[in-house]
Length: 253
Picture 1 (cartoon, rainbow, N blue to C red):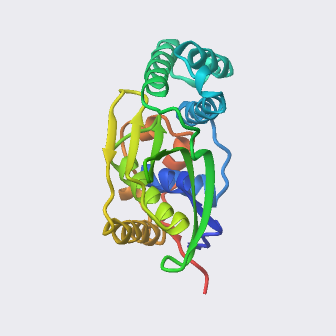
Picture 2 (tube, rainbow, N blue to C red):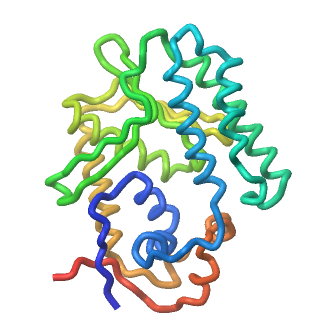
């Protein structure tokens, strides 16, 4: 059975979910299945984005550790503990995100207003024959260039690679230049990944995204289902376990 990929614009969120699990992407965005539960990582990522935006909307003199903590605590009150596996998990995640986010916000930025704060960009890429969209959390001026920072709750090598190359291709295409550095911060372990892109990486980025786009048209079966934490926390795990058909993401001709 073939299905039409009806998403007009592939966003960083779409690609992130596809990388984590093609089956989850299928049930969520193609079949429009209703999730059986709320995913805490999605909720936490949304809150982090709001915290970052609120913090950088403040005048420079007010961007203090105390003010950062107040903003974080204000937004964290909206989280319900029942979306986590246990109250212990809830407290551990909240403590880690609060600590690492507050440290980074108050230690790693200059005195100039940011170039962008939580800004969403949409661009058509003729080479890929598709629209892509990306949200840039923070972009800052740095001498004659700029830097980009991405805060991630769900961090692994694949996610870092995805956001790095998306940032490269968007900056080059939208602004006509690459950032001097791209920084990705993991808010569950405090790790920081920094890379200074070279001019050749625009081509690498387009090739990487083209491969992802091609994978969206590849057949899915039980052999492509991931294991471990991805399945344990997936809101579609029950319907996925009962669905043994092979399906394709293909354009209708």
